[in-house]
Amino acid sequence: MAEKIYPDSGVELSTFVAKNYDRVMNTLSFGLYSSFIKKAIKQMGIQPGNTILDLGCGTGRNAYLMAKYIGDTGQITGLDISELMEKQFMKRFKNRHNITFVKQRIDQPFHLNRQFDIAFISFVIHGFPHEIRKIVLQNTLTHLKQGGIFYILDFAEFDMAKMPALHRFIFKKIECKYAFDYIERDWKTILKEAGFGYFEEHHYVKKYVRLLKAIKVKP
Image 1 (cartoon, rainbow, N blue to C red):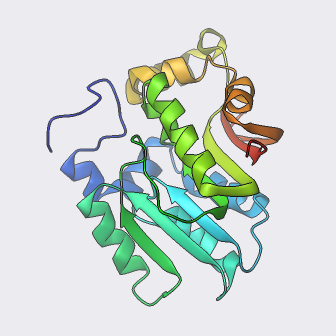
Image 2: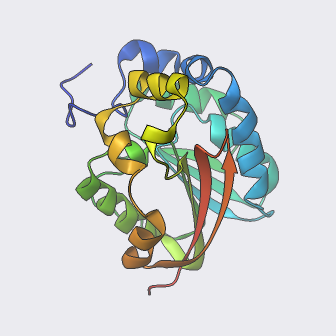
């Protein structure tokens, strides 16, 4: 793997992890990821015909779950920078004309020259320094239609000092430095300042994980 842009981050993956990403996620979450991601995507209320921007789409595992809701008239565009992820994504959707992959960094300003009904990001944004997260939010705002929905599936806000000792030990072992900062921040306030509002949330895994819904309100 090339030298990391963010040395303290976990979002830039080694070759081994990238090749085996879905299996690694299952292992690190003790099998819980597969369960709550299905529940979260169902609770997103995706409708036939929706257009979805999947930020940091990885292997397409989440897009595959979303695809059954969009029908033949909807579209999913996945963004990622990993060639290994691209290969797995393209293999998964080789027969789906309405699901595409774009090799694109989400932590730098970009323009796809279109807007979407829904933007989705799953366990990616916590792995960036906070100033970089603001760029991701601006990219999302730019690419959502007015009134479009932004879903963040990631860690909830919680006090790590109050976690049971075993949970705290696991979190510290598997998560990067930026995750510790992420869980301490008020994400509704951050999103409001970025141009979002009308929040809803669903919690999973003893409320350590959250699906946070935000609507684009800023033109």
